[in-house]
Amino acid sequence: MAMLRGRRVVVVAGAGGVGKTTVSAALALGLAAAGARVAVVTIDPARRLATALGIPGLGDEPHRVDPSVVEAAGMRMTGTLDALQLDPRATFDRLIAREAPDDAARDRIVRNRIYRHLSGAAGAQEFMAVERLHELVDSGAYDVVVLDTPPARNALDFLDAPERMTRFVEGRGLRLLLGPRAGAGRTGWRALQAGGHMVMSVVERLTGAQLLTDISEFLQSFDGMYQGFSDRAAAVHDLLASDSTRFVVVTGPRPEPASEAVALWRRLADERYPLGAVVVNRVHREPGVTGTPDGLAGLLRRAGAPDPEGLASRAAAALEGARARAAADAHEVGTLSRALSGPPLAVVPSLAEDPVEVAGLAQVTRALGGGARDPGGSAGAAPPPDQARRQTT
Ligand SMILES: Nc1ncnc2c1ncn2[C@@H]1O[C@H](COP(=O)(O)OP(=O)(O)O)[C@@H](O)[C@H]1O
Ligand SMILES: [Mg+2]
Image (cartoon, rainbow, N blue to C red; front, side):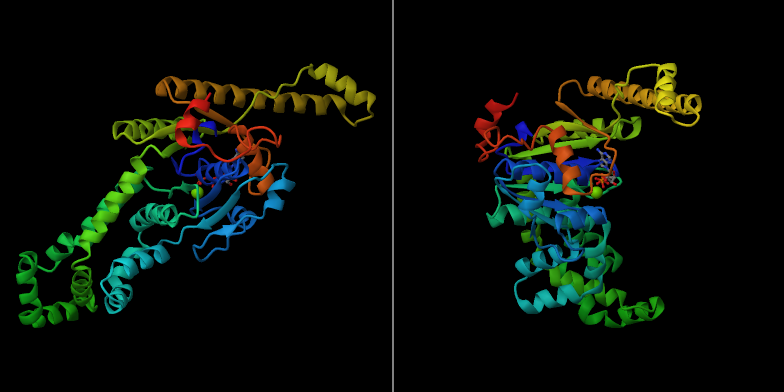
């Protein structure tokens, strides 16, 4: 939390299911508690978490989290927290509306079936996550925007998504589909449309679909918009690579997500993205229980429990299991720390209850070093980045 104060963008990445959405929400909560105006873009949050944050399933407008709920969870709220759920299609439609030369062109695109398909595809979700981030930063309404990232096959796909999408929209691949004459550039393309109409309708009859018309319309509609798209992709890249951004990589204490986290971290470092920290989530702690099964059996007997010996031995077995889990997790944290050699590692304990309520999130926030209860403590307006760096311990 200390290293994030004063930043404008926080990107939370990692393998699927490790707790990215939870950590995003917890970090956003901590930044808001400390005085910043925060927006968190969540992606497919657990239903109960979405409910706790007050964000309905559809629509991607920010909703203000009720500060009294945060205060009821024992955390002082000096800033504001807005949460929203990414809606890739709505974001894409807005992007089209901004980039299209006029309303007619916009309508043609959003009605087009290739576009409808494209804007719902997995790659579009990644592209739109960073696009939505950019919109919110641009709006000027927030000091910091926290971005949860989509559950991609490769956790860093979203870094390449804007460029990939620009290339798709540019249409080289689609033009190839239409045959050599279409691939020969705009003159050939126009010729195909004028003279090749029959060819197209024959193929259409064969495919039984309006596919080629859709492709041709799609390419035509995007004509002249590539520049806008690639400028936007470049702007998004600059934002992600700037010093006011920090990447947080989340993993669990298991070999698979941990090695993905290491790979992610290295790639971010290689490509000079601003690194923050690695969060190891759901780490089991040493139970910290003392005593022997005999001692416990004695206590249970005196308390009048039925079958004190049986109960005590089951408790001892459970304790043994918990200790073994804690030891395995500690070993994994050590391995990860050595493999990364350098970045700050933040450990979040495995909570007894899923953190899908604000109170549970607040526990995660505290584990990450935020959410001071003390009103005179670290709560207050977020300092500018250079000051925040000096404050980092
Ligand atoms: N520290 C934790 N202790 C217990 N449960 C957790 C913790 N962090 C996350 N969870 C639970 O694990 C599940 C996956 O978390 P989520 O944040 O949705 O992961 P991701 O976004 O990476 O897919 C959720 O049910 C969440 O409530
Ligand atoms: Mg998620």
